[in-house]
Length: 426
Image (cartoon, rainbow, N blue to C red; front, side):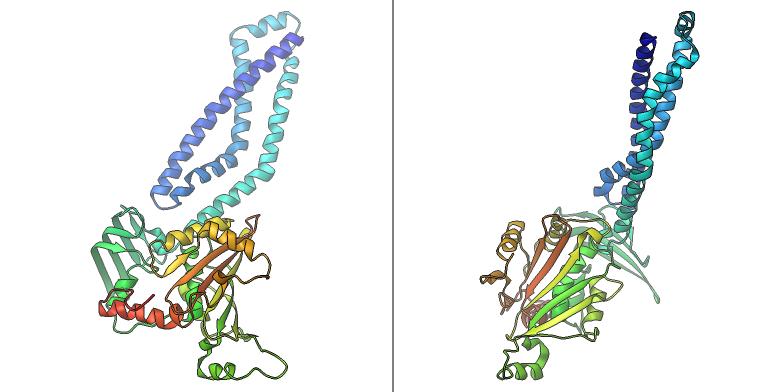
């Protein structure tokens, strides 16, 4: 009897393993073809194909295991009857019920795994799939542009086509844009194009007769947030908080005059919190050009120094749909601003060194002084994150009178006058 049990268990195990490999290969191949088709059609991100395939495989694994077990049992018993093995075992006094034991010994661990997968892994995998698709659907119009494919904008009013790019992601060849307007349709075509924060932004400025400059606070906020919204790392409807401090020159003549007088008796009046009515004048600008559906919670402050500012956006990364880590945010900002003359994204080692130095408040750190880039049109961006990768602080450093005001104005005027963009700027 022991010989029968061991023989049957061995045959069942071999049959189960072979069946599982065959079915898994077929299913993965089918889903790979379908997923590649969805990626080619723009329904999912190409870089998410392997990850999505893994989630789909986990989602269907309970069914695959159950089917493999059933096929293994039926196939093994069928073979034994076909080869007359069962006749021999019956003649030796082995009854049909003897088969139940070896079958159960193979089945119970498989069924246990199926139950765990169905109860825990399947719901988790399904959530991950939905988050990947949601994040991809939330990408901006710029992120939708794929060389060699017609793409429709998120609002359905524009159709884009780019024949090919130059390899660095900044320039594209043979650009076509069809836009539907209330008064008809317009078609724009060009031999080449450059991707800006808004497609064709520099060209639009150069051809405009009136150009408005962004506010100082929005410059830092939009510079940090919009690329991450465009990359799908931050959903447009995610609740965002922004903290900032500026020199008193940003408050106009009245505040300048007040702060240049001696501080009130008994205090240095070094720092003031304001905007407590939650209706700061820059909020609409932050929401619109940050690509958000809701205004952020804005906590501005003014310090007793003339100019320079720090804008900070803290993020709970674990609450974001894709659960990105700080390196994902840093990579997205670096890619977005690659080749930009006036916007610098601090390197990973630079951020790590500053994070270590500024773990405490002791000691002066010039790089994080709000006056560090005063007198320039530059903006410096930093990404700091905790060890677990679940939280991040995005920091923008700029001169509120430079990049946040006159520097941007001169840069726009240079474009409008056909001058070199950086003329007169540093």
